Length: 167
Image 1 (cartoon, one colour):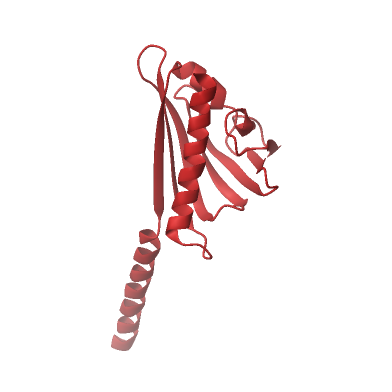
Image 2 (cartoon, helix red, strand yellow; image 1 turned 90 degrees about the vertical axis):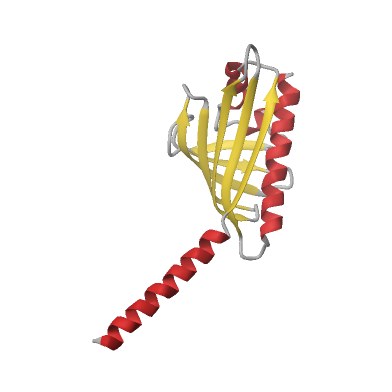
């Protein structure tokens, strides 16, 4: 009985160490942009899950492949300029609070376990702040810096272009 208890204890310790190691490799990127346009105008530009290309320069084509626009569970495929694709699923959508969350289910980006939220906040008269944040892990073939730099680049280019379009 003591050997069984020792074995179970050691197994539990091993699982705790593995869980901690997995948690420590979780990465986080947050970016924001001040936009000289109302929160309503800004949200209207980026609110369509099925039209990322309306404001993000890396989206050559966006297509809803299942579900409905603005509804939890909708799935989209984004085609990039080089022909690569990214598949995503809408996990939350709140028109009133001007936010949406989604996950990447498959794609060419060097990330896995990716979950992200876009949120538009009012910032005075005819001004807004867009906050884009994501948690993810690097795919096994990539290091943390590559994964973080890629996501940062995606966020920076999208927010920069959104600002350019709206101002």
